Amino acid sequence: MDKLEIKGGWNELKGKIKQAYGDLTDDDLKHEDGKDDETLGRLQQKLGKSREDLVKWINSL
Image (cartoon, rainbow, N blue to C red; front, side, top):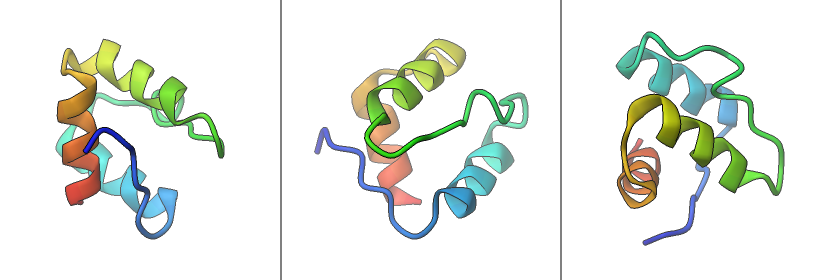
């Protein structure tokens, strides 16, 4: 699955992501509708994970 599926509200997901990676900032997790690629790109740079790994992890939250 290579598509980001935001389940529930982004703010809820953002809180879960921050719990797992406390060094992420609000700027790192800024998300706008239709700009999933930008959000994933920032997370990839910050966390050093592949897009596929991030998508799977976020979709599992």
